Length: 313
Image (cartoon, rainbow, N blue to C red):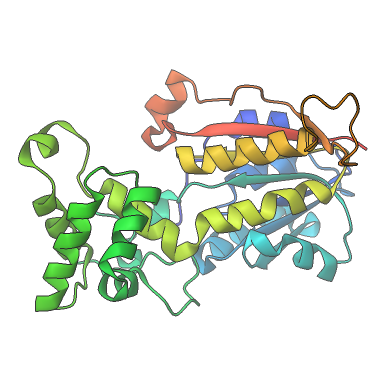
């Protein structure tokens, strides 16, 4: 299968970066290279793009897509949480822009052997963003305690039937290990009342999201990375982040707000004595969301939100 991923909020993200032709930019979630290609088009021969991704298929596809710009592109297989180390190895101290597209690519969702989708019956329960990792989704489903499975589905899937789903999973795995996406979907379906299944979306959607987030440590990686990314920006440099669910968006919104106003002094203090200095300003008071036309063209963009922060010296 060809690695495809329709870049969400493409023009909005590129515009938000205020690209300088001779600047250095980092794509922390390179994917198929859709955003990266547009950035490269705006760079002069002195400009530079560093593309980071942990997925081998993405690396291969993006490298091919960016072939005509190879003189100004460096592709690194890593997780964006390691951005500081990646840039240090390349001899780069500061950059002019960083952007993240936190969505799962269309390729990952549609490639049945990757195990991300609940629409395939016989796919292995994998869900690894980085296939070098030993743990898979099957390990979580078959080895985590009932409470931990419940907690993951409750917190990361925000599913009100989390307790019942966890109970059904543990009951099923006592009979035999749960090995495929189809088996897990049937178990989830049985844990949700028929009346709810008839009116809501796919009953497995929230649980699959929750397991994927836990397996790939997506929220921890995001939380740990944003402050460091802001520190890596040159004055007037920007970081733009596209999120796809409320948990990610909340983290980005909170970290940006804290970097804009880090003061922890009590409100009644006449002057700041904590010594914490603002690192910049939030450009997007409200997140940028896709137009109806974008949603029509790419249904998976519906829940996306773009937030932007600018570094000030």
